[in-house]
Image (cartoon, rainbow, N blue to C red; front, side):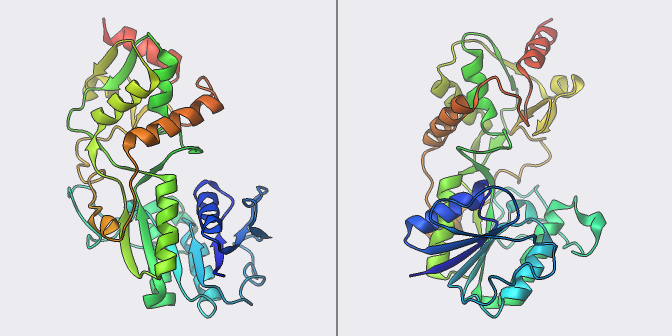
Length: 329
């Protein structure tokens, strides 16, 4: 039986990876600090990764596979140092945000990475790209040809707490026969990966002991196609009100994520962000379910959680109505 250790297996992605490994017949141990339980069938070791001796309970055992999903370079470096003698293969879940530039459409895994942070510098916490870059370096230095680096794009699907992708099917469903505000950005693109496609790929990478880096991203599609599919899935019959980027920014609407934003919408000067090459992912057998299926799964989850709930990203329905009225004057 394959022995797998997941560092952080109780969160959203970590939990899906844990479940995918369990479904593959592995014996899975999760090391995590939080109060949440590991998926049924996995062993949970509670440990604070900032504390000395955090890995004492897991370093005494040989692991066929170790998966780390942390975005903190210090955590990754400490784990790599503790487990380098006990792991046959490791998979680090990085991000396409690790790249230094986002203005090169179609860039692949050979693109330059962001400058790695000093993992001991407390002021570096907000540098996500630098944290991921430093974490990748720590993995490569500790494990060499035993390390796989998986760089997902925007991870979406049931259970997503960021509320970015789910905003659109939820908003169209909530609006019903009323209007919905969208960006008038015909050149804007989106590139997502379903969380369960990603989890399955991470398991496959571990089973094959793949080494090297791979962008785990879906196909790049026009943002308008995402909105069209989301509207169709929700049964929305109201008007679609398209506002120019200048008008949206003038009314304080933000890009991409967070409060008072239109999620997934990116500025025109970042044409490479949602157009990364996924040729290597496909070559390695990475699966991509139809976008319409991911949207349907996401909408079911959004309905279960409540279409009118407070969200981490997007406009409130009241904000949207006010903006539509102002923009139509």
